[in-house]
Structure formats: structure tokens, C-alpha cells
Length: 411
Image (tube, rainbow, N blue to C red; front, side, top):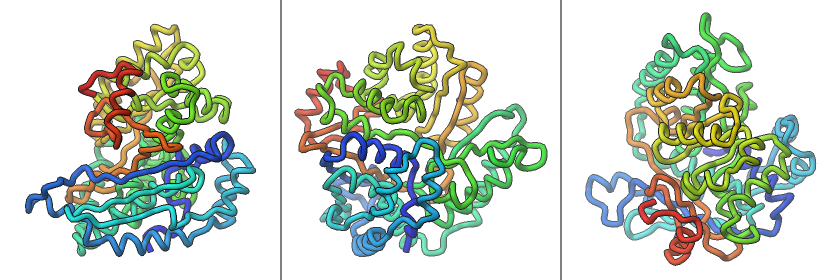
């Protein structure tokens, strides 16, 4: 059984779910799976990404996932977080994932189709564990004797890079649940980092080195290992607001205002790439610059994004030193260090590293996602600054969205 706890997911699933419970309890949604490695006409080289042979195994793991309930100790951990409200924890005490809302099919191309459809409140927790299941099923079948020696060598190299001179206040976080090689490897990575680069809970970490592991997005490992759980909002939240808000043009503003209504200044990191950076900056006015603690980068050139954010704060007469820029797009440790050196001393910084931490054993990782494509029967879309990350199944709606938000065709 790959997933043994409903806490084995990212914190932002719970923070968004709480908003859904309080503000959008009747919303109906649809999510679709996509493997970016795959091709419709698979060459022999590409056939290694075939997931169809494992579809029965994936279904069995999802069936086991749907048998889980929250234990009291897990609910107590959630209750201990200042921004999690008691009625939400009470709801989770009755919650379980229902298998009727998810369908997994093998396609003739060798790919698989995963569709999740039902009430947002009852489907939002599927995404992360299902992606973790697909990953682990794939790798345990294709890498029956995983090269853990190589994985540990690579992890040791990362530790050495993080402990280099001149990085005294660099901190990273683990964002790697959805694309991890396996649950056991994920835990090993976090244990090694906790010991050898230190954590916020253990000031100084290894002798002579300040704590560099700020925390993890994974709530289960945060509880198990004494780490800080990290996360705010994901793309699906702002996508759903396209259907839930009063009008499409104001959907991003509506999403930020609804978030602030729920958390009253807590969890104040805004996601910037659902409509591209230009559209984000148009909506992220003086009010939001002051209200939110910072913004998160997840597509496009991170160096350009950081410079534009700093300039935007300055233009709005907000001191960038009081704001946090979070970088989280396909980071490696060397890229993290480059970004740290460019922006240190100019703002507060945070870095979330995912696949490169939890799935770096020498094998090409799966580039898999599950994205919301409909809300209340209406298409929704993400138009990021990296076109390959866009996902929408209605081209007419996509064209309309570009027009409303003045998004160029190339994005």
C-alpha cells in the first residue's frame, strides 16, 4: 500500500479545502491527468513512459487510498496549526475519498486517462496521492532494483552544495510529494537533509551550519519528522474562481479577496502564473501588494520574474525587504543558489525544490500533472508563462480567456 495516511499530501490541499468548505461547498469540478513525457505516436524510445500496463495496479492503490480515514493524532496535528479552523477539522474527522469520483482507463496509445469528477469538497484531496501512486507504481515496475547508491551520492552532493561558504541564510523546502520516486525514498531524503543541513526546529543543524531546511509541503512527514508544514494556494484555486466569481475579468482579484477573507492576512503568498505575469501584475495592485506577504514563481524565467516583482513593489511604494519571493519551478540546488545570489539582500527569499530532491536517482522522472479543467460545468484554464504547462480542453474558451486578460497567443 503506497499511501497509508490522508496526511500524505501537500499542505495547500488542506488550506484550499478549508476555503472550499466555507465559501464554495456546492462547487462541482472535473480534473484530468496529463503525462508531459508521453507522445501520441510513441517511438521505441518514448515507450518507456507507457503507463497503460500498470492501470490495474494503479486502480488497486487508489481503492486502498479510498479506504483511509484521518486518525485522531492526525486531526490533532492539523488542529495545532493557527490557520486551520475547528469546524474544518471536525469535517475531516468524517471525511474519506470516494472511489466513485475517479476513473482510470488505459488508452490504445499506451498512456492512461485519469478523470476526477464530483463535488470540489470531496475530490480536492485526490490529486497529490494519486500522482504519488502513479509515480511509485511506474518506478517499482520499471526499476525493480533501484540504484539507491547513486541516489545517495547525488543527495550527498546537494548537501555539499548547500553547505558551501556564502550561503548562511539560504533556506530550501521540500515540494516533492507528487513526483517522488517512492514514499520511503522521500522520507530518507528528508531525514538526511534534517541531519546534514539542519532545520528551523534545530537551530544550527550540523555543527557549524545554520538550519537550511525550512520545512516540507508534505503534512505527514512534517508531523512525523518535526518539520514545518508549508503551503498556501495552488493553480486550481484561482482556476475555479473563473467559474465562481462575478465576472471572468475579475476572477483573479476575486480569488485573492476570497483568500484574504478566509485567512485574514495569514498564508499571504499569492500565486502569480495562472494568467501570466502581465495579467498578474495588472491585478496585484497597491492593496494586494500591502495585504499579501509575497508571491510565488512557478513558470517562465525566474530571474526576470524576480526583477519584475521587485520593480512592481517599488512602483507601488512597498519596501521589497518586507516581502517574500518564493521560487518553486523545476528548481535544482545549483539554480537555487544562483537565484539566492541574485536576490539576497533585496527581499526575503524562499525556495521550494520538488522532483530534483525526491526523484533524482539517475532515472528520467515522469512529468505528470492533474489539473482542474472544469468548474460548475464551465471550462477553466491555466495560461502560465511556460506554454507547455498550459492545460485546457476547450479551445474557444482558451481564446476568450486570452482576449479578456490580454494574453498574447504565444503564452
